[in-house]
Image (tube, rainbow, N blue to C red):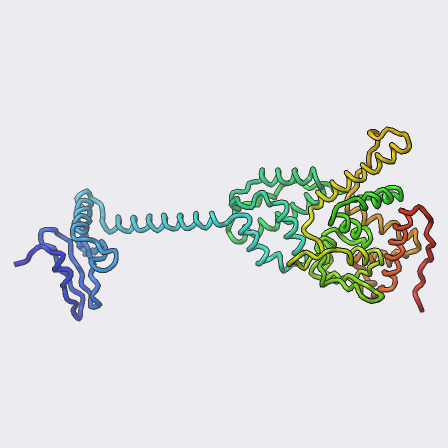
Length: 424
């Protein structure tokens, strides 16, 4: 006599050479399938109106996550009720599985999106694309600095209004930098589109700032005022600004200088800027004037760091320089009997020091080609192919003349300048 299934009967059902079923008497359609492997599974079987036999898997009857007999009977009862209402339990099961799969996929996608912050995606962008570019370091610098406020936001949360706001903020401070951010930002989000992280580029359609080439050059009087102010600056601002002025190199290149790049021994001390740090990707040897060597020799080393200077904020350095220059200028005004409060220092930027050096050197007898070599500007056209002279001696003479010129400004005397002539 057939009996209803029991938990004990299911547990002790022996596997056979072929799969077989144990029906649950009193619960039509409910069975336990016993496989040759010993696996047991609850199923519900029924016949459709087209005479097709259908098996709906309810769940495991043994092992981890197994249904109890009570749960299996409830599931089979639900299937019977669905049939009584004209529904197909197999179709319902497929729909449920599909909905569950969609739910899991949506949860996984949401979890990934939570991880797709600007900071995380930028790191992937650099490794996958930007670091392989000649301008990779500059791309990193601009995006890390200007998108810092977005670091924890999801990349697909950034809207065009966000891009407009950050561009306007940068534009108010540095119009040219705003255009650089726009260009690098567009390329970054275009990469995000290619990786299916976002659907739209928030930088598309944003305005380009009209760039006007700066022509600001400090006068001799302004240089004299700056040099007097440098003497009053605190460490390491004093050394940094003075070296920036003496070397005529770029702000970031001087700021990231490392001791290993310096050779301060012998008669021809140099600073070799590696190609990885040079803006144009070309290694650059900068001859160091005696004044520059004296600054570097007198500097304390930063414990545990290869860098000459700790990380410096351009805006903080410039703000402090402006304060001290104004302080010196007002003291001069008071000494002349003028109103100190009426004194003002004309606006300028730290990068203007490089332009000032380049503009002043020809006055000292330095030819323009040598000036371009001092600045590490790349030659173009035929000269770039055939002109392979290093200009080492010419550059050293030019920077020594520039250092002497600056020194003479502070002691208010004319320097004895002898134009350089390269040896035949």
